[in-house]
Image 1 (cartoon, rainbow, N blue to C red):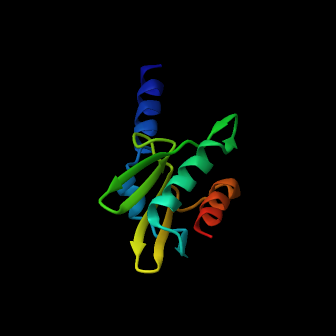
Image 2: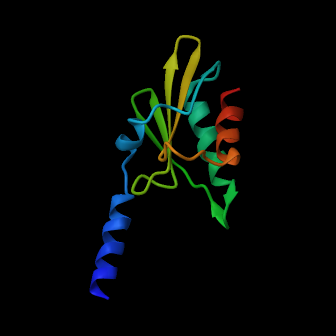
Length: 118
């Protein structure tokens, strides 16, 4: 029984990743927007917080560093979705990363990102 519990704990820890780890994966979406970076970031955060998946919201925490923004969901401690929004002279660039490279995210999640960038 101890062996099973130990193996399960190792398996769960192996699945943990940070936002920095997720950013190492190529973005699944790279979009240009005419909107300001802050407006796009707030839209994604609000959209994800009101989007339901498997009985709960996607979530979303907005972080900023200067004029750059990131939205991390469900939260920074256990991220699945990371969007980095960078200002450009004509608006902003949006890069969406998903924590799994072998699985596609829900279209509900990616639709919010695409809609907010328009």
